[in-house]
Image (tube, rainbow, N blue to C red; front, side, top):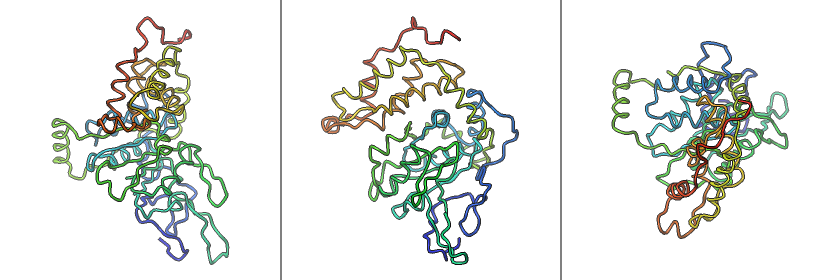
Length: 366
């Protein structure tokens, strides 16, 4: 990269160089960086078919990660963002990379470290001596899919650079507000161990993630399948994932998801759960109204990718932990008693009755 312009080029940013020139300025056609071209240009508007295609594609390299592929698809179809947490070596980054390739979008990966600056993410104005003018140099945030790897290793100042982008799908550079590409999707990963030198995400930042998933160690059977695959193909990796959809399909599927029906009893069930977190004796701060909306939107998307145009209480129950586990703040008593957020949510879900079979969940028009 050109180091004569006075900027600090961050070596930990993977820009998939197809979309960037050698001096760091961006090309005009930056589409599908880091993704294989789709075999067909046929637009997939059905969320269920879109999810099936993406799942089948990433399953060529991932084993036992269906829950996370479903969650990433749900967030993508609802303009949300996802936080993946897990110990090293459980394929958090591989999940994000493989999913990005399957959906056929421009992809950038930022390896977060304490020396990454906000301008390294959003961009800055660079003085070009040959022209005597300042030129806007956009950062890796200007991508459809941004993977922020080990986000808790970045400083709070750098973490906050993602806030406006995640919420407003725009960034401000030198007083200029610039729109980000559409679709725009952030996948962040974090490591819960080796906390020395890390910066815990503040509540305001965690609340921006519509869903959080904990990636656990695989069971013995899945790990044996993994051994067999890599024994056959030692170089197996995300590059083997085929792009099966594209931006047009994603935007069209979002419109279908928006039309999914949510009956009033299901809405009441959502409110019962969210308000239950606020009233729980072990919780200092419960779910916010943003959590309520995340429930609504994610419930619609989960129903759609499972072939329904109406939301069931089971959709809401299945999404309770991904929506709430990173949003609730335990109080001192809960922490002293080693009561986890997961255990609090388990107790809450058991205590709140779900709407019964006598309720009509489908719309009268269906």
